[in-house]
Image (cartoon, rainbow, N blue to C red; front, top):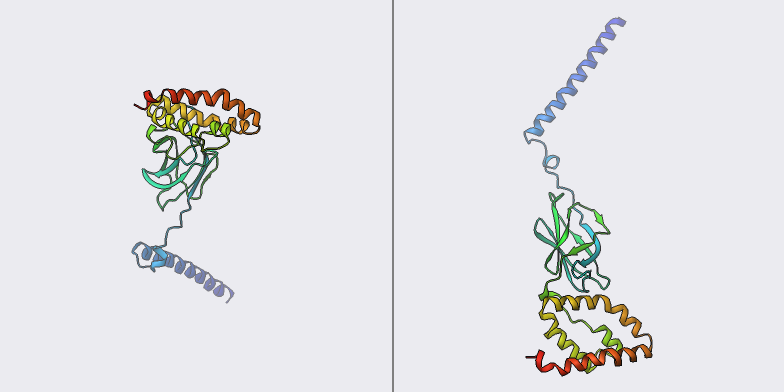
Length: 231
């Protein structure tokens, strides 16, 4: 009797394994034939998080940061995905969105419309905190796409509305920004002059010396030659 019970138990286990194997095989057949419910085969792809970039933006020639307000663009496989502007410290931040299937696609960057030297592969949720961008040079036609102050002259006169500063601005716009060399000189000036202007503005003596020994003579020469460079 005991042997008979043991044999029945063994046959039951074998039958259970066979049923399980047949069930697994049936599920695979149904999956391959598209007969399982839609929620089992047509799952939505997971949401894609933006790729975060932050860093500084600078020019190789002449060397230095780009002006505040310069536009920075990010393109994924040549398609524009994000845009921002450079802050006063020549820094930027960009959140570059992507879609399912964009993983690994190339991100390129443009600064003031000029292709940056750096590229990256798009990764969902990636964060690049020190991704500095560089370009060969700013285009002359968009070098300063916004009004720029004359830092040193403003510090020397104590106001940005002095008539002498208007003369210098006119010379900058009419003469200097019309040539590549002049544009590079202006770009270098706006890179170097802010800390110098801060130093000048700290004391009346330094303002007086710079105004009478440097700025006033330059203004006099520019005004005296106005008939030449205005025509």
